[in-house]
Length: 395
Image (cartoon, rainbow, N blue to C red; front, top):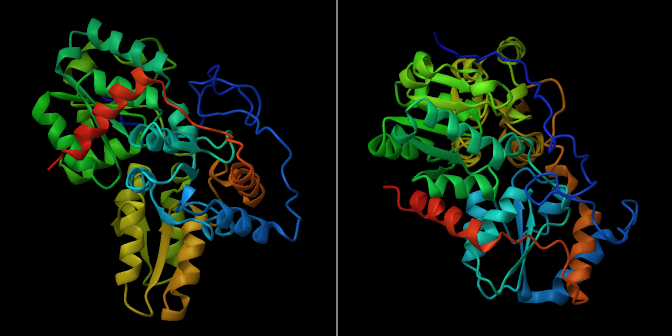
């Protein structure tokens, strides 16, 4: 019996972490964050851009601002570099002279930057409530319980964990402790190939869709080779026999943005725009990826549009801030770029990093006040870094 569930509903059963209100309360193991201290400038303040520029100039080389591709334009304009989460973390590590790393992204990204930078550098997240719902779908306690289930089924010694970059430092540390590696959406296939050389099975955390799409679409495994582990069900909702037969044990997690795209979205845009190229991120559902013309990471999407011929039409299945930015960038080249879904869908937690939060952060640092520092404890950092180093060593 198999558990494919490529068209499962997007509901997630609440956990104690999920019940934390964004911006309220605190849990150091959660992506949910806490309320930002201090008084934020009003969004209507006409001087916000000038205030941000002045504070950044005052800080000079002491500050290095990172901007994730999904950030608002009002924030991106102050980024020293832009990119995906791992590229930005590596860019931060390459700037040891910067005393402050201001990460305009989400919590797990700032954690990765803290792991890869020196102890003399402080990584700052402008809003501590900027988290990632996908990362929150796998807690350290849940994953430890999953490993117990695998042990009881007699398969743990055959399993190699592979965790997506979009995971907490705790999950990265678990992966490092258990002989696994981290992957990005760009190198997931290489990571899985490496893992299968180490063991017979893979526990893929926390995004089921990237794991399934990579295994089935890119590596030729079948859907029957994949089972879905649901942390909200006893034993993950799987039998020992299912675990023994599976090659890919997928965690029941997903991206709230990419998971909303549907086959109907693809069919609708093809009807509205004859000749359109559908390009989606591999965090999309398996049936959406199968219906698309092209599939790739954020960097792949950008490069594909750069290389696209003038006059071509593209429907993009990824975060809306990036799609709008690309549409504006390539409009002069007569490239028509639209969002795959009719419904507007930003990454809501990424959007918590807005201009008022950035201004407050930069002005605080310019006044010598260190705010919203993200620190990973030494033990967690040790094993998380081990997992990241295994990824960096992949051929």
